[in-house]
Image (cartoon, rainbow, N blue to C red; front, side):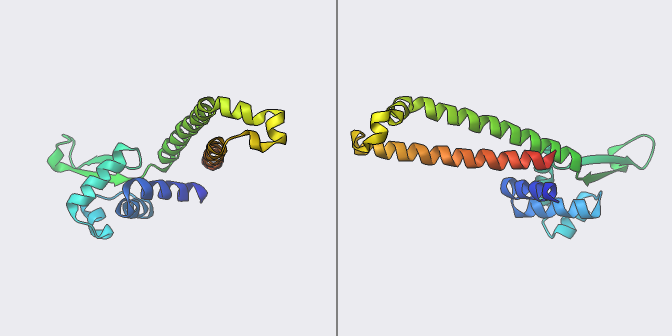
Length: 166
């Protein structure tokens, strides 16, 4: 259930409410053609087609060809959209791992950028007497700590998502 909520949440963030509605519809009803999706999602055909293409491009929807005859002519073929849920989980997991690596790299860069300030604030004499830091250094240190906290929080959230997707 948590996996499903993660897929819906990412779809909502990236593609919007209509795409999330299409995704839920395809999961509930199974394979459907564009007209059915458009009608049941209560969206214009143009918007439905664009959203399905976007979902397909990012691995959240796929198209299956069902020929009416052996010659596989496009005019005599049904094109059905569906959600390959296992692929969605893999795509989401891969994206989360990539984001996790980016966050860790960003945290390292933040520490390196402010390395001198961190070294100064870690000195024993500065820990005992905080007045050795200027107001500007205090502000930069608070800003750095807030940034590192947010990055740590985002990292924990991503780790939870990755564990849920396993």
